[in-house]
Image (cartoon, rainbow, N blue to C red; front, side, top):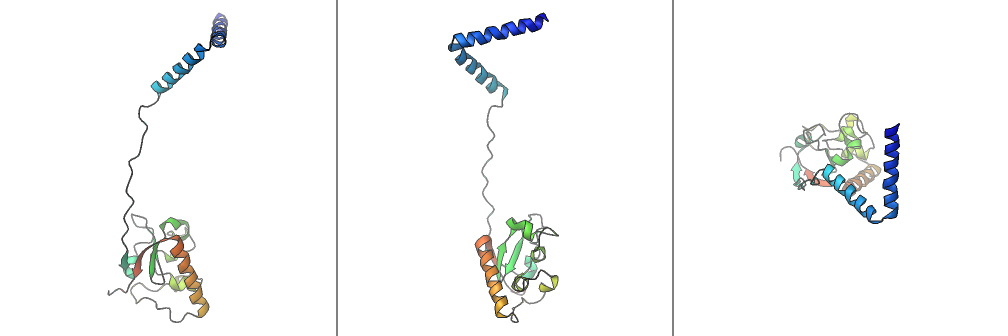
Length: 168
């Protein structure tokens, strides 16, 4: 009980001294600063700036495009739309591998026919070993849909290449 009484008396004395002499406030603030400076680490951790990955515009064949389905070690997802290739990696929730997104079938592939017909079925994809789909059988509405998709991709994603035939 006497320890508690001594603590209470000491606390009351300190509070009275702070109230009576404003200089004690400054001393208390300096003490708090020194304790904080002593107990925290010296230098703040600053991460070294990293140069962003350089992407080179290049031609891709349908076969070269296949590995960019989001499953590779770099995780990039590329998609061809009407002959243009876009890096859609930041849209992983839509274009990601497996069942991650509704457009996952199009990752690493030419998505032109599927987008034009608003279909995500696998039969909308051309075999990468065959010639690029010329889309000659599309009607006017389907071409308009494809152009709208192309504008969407051009405004939202980075254009990284052009789709060319396998033998080029």
